Length: 178
Image 1 (cartoon, rainbow, N blue to C red):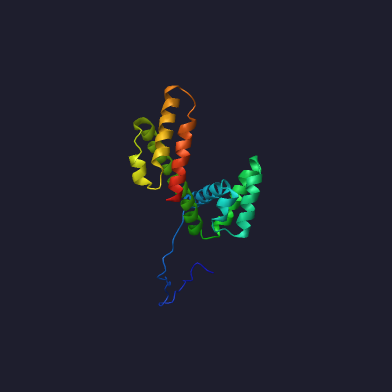
Image 2: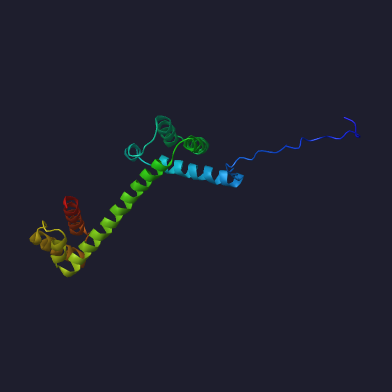
């Protein structure tokens, strides 16, 4: 093309811009998402077989998680990366919800145990079984009082808290039947 020649553009020349919004994702955001998926994968690997059955996973993920549970050191790290890669191609919302549900159940159980320990300690110190009877009407008042007296004697004599554990187990059984 000569320098003297002019390039002529057509007068109706225009660039069509679609109304679709283009979403640009930064490299940092992609890395954060990958880290989050690897973290989710690590949490899944730490679960027991029974807990994994409660989470909606396909066969590839179950196999990869089972393999990661057997692998140690560098291979484990690479397997976690692979699980993260598998999770990128899946809808992770049901998986996350099921995992949160498992964690919440664990937290509820811990809260219940703390409540039962407090009831037991109050029973041993006061000897009053009325609060327990109010919560668990099927509880045996006489058995609770007897156990409380024995636990108080063990506590005063600095003996092992065998009866206190029996009270806790009895309260746990009562809460399970409620």
